[in-house]
Length: 120
Image (cartoon, rainbow, N blue to C red; front, side):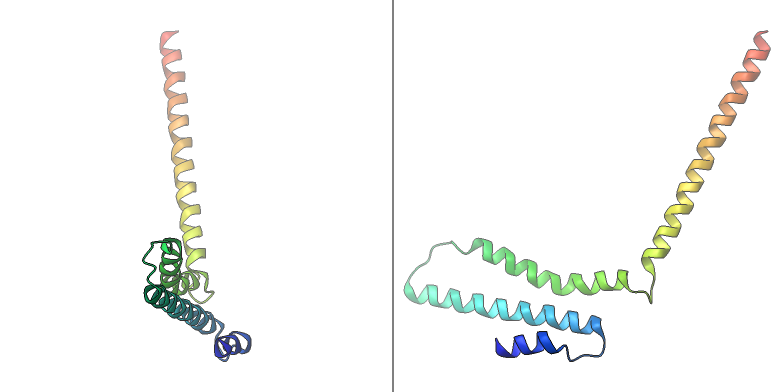
């Protein structure tokens, strides 16, 4: 616990993303080991009840975060600017759909005008 606290306060890596990944993995490892000790103590005492279901799901979530956080960091990275590209493509698609809708409206208005003139 002391080593974990020391690491979390000093942040020894030069890259902040590596610090975050290492911090998440260390916290996850410490929580998993602590949970394992709790299960061993529970089995030694003879308590075989299933009261630890919530904690199991919390640990599964923590272990999944070890994989999810780097992916989120990749999307947020200025080096890749993936979110900016996605936003640009969404704006282009929105303009394309709006221009298509305007063209359909103009075509319908022209057709109505031609029908009106033909009826006169």
